[in-house]
Image (cartoon, rainbow, N blue to C red):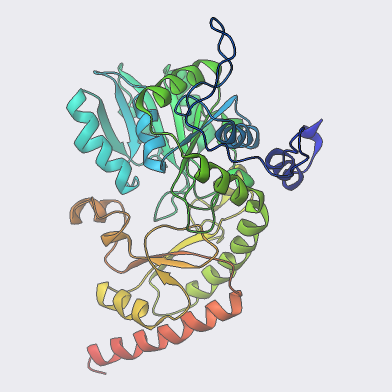
Length: 393
């Protein structure tokens, strides 16, 4: 029955569970590491919170339903979710990964998994020919971020998933930027969806968490085994906070995305801005494809100033955004990818990934768009003045 509801209604239905005994409108916080067993030979559903907890279950059930998967999993961080997903591979297996992949994922692939014989190849996943050419007999996973961080490149999820299936491998999709509000990769053929739930799903910069949703029972069983064995589960209190954040996800991200579209158009019209990366702009190379697989350009954009000096000047003069790592919060967050999210990449790797020295990433929050634009406009005046002095004009 719930499948006939609009997404915003379904979101509330999946996150509000009335307690049958007390009538409480919120899922209880079960702060218990262990559970009494009434029968010597037959244990109940819960025995130890690492293996399962009713509060965490409510969150995992909710995200599974919202992504259209068979089972959800809550981890202690986004990287815990991603690392556990890659541990579905074995020694000798091979993964195809975007060349501009998030720095944490880059680190786990290059400095950890390689030591255990798991191979990888970095490619431009927006180029299907390049993806196909990278497939080997031992390729088991094609990993996708779309839109990518921080250049917002768009990969064709449906086409990559079809290519993966033709070669008997899996498709993992990081859906952090879009969330199930705007994009549902499992419906496009992906096998596993991953989230840094620290970002939009939490939405308040107060929880570090990761989520995964499996598209099949086979993957779900394997992932649960790893989640339980490794123990990188999300704590009970944080599970409850994430459920609370999830309830307002739809209205938060839609408001932020509306503002992001206006701000992207503003930056695109400024002479000091060399390039704007935002799939909601019609001149974005992936705009048409993105519109086919997602319902919004999202709430994150990047823009490139002339160089690092200009980026520093801009950051020093804005007043509203927080200058910090992370994204997806009620407050706007301005980041400098070369020294933050992608610091693990060397200069040559960053240049190949299109991450220039003047690139700034903006996660648009819930402030009024006019106030943000005014703040950015004032900061650009200072950038313009400095560049004029620097050029000797």
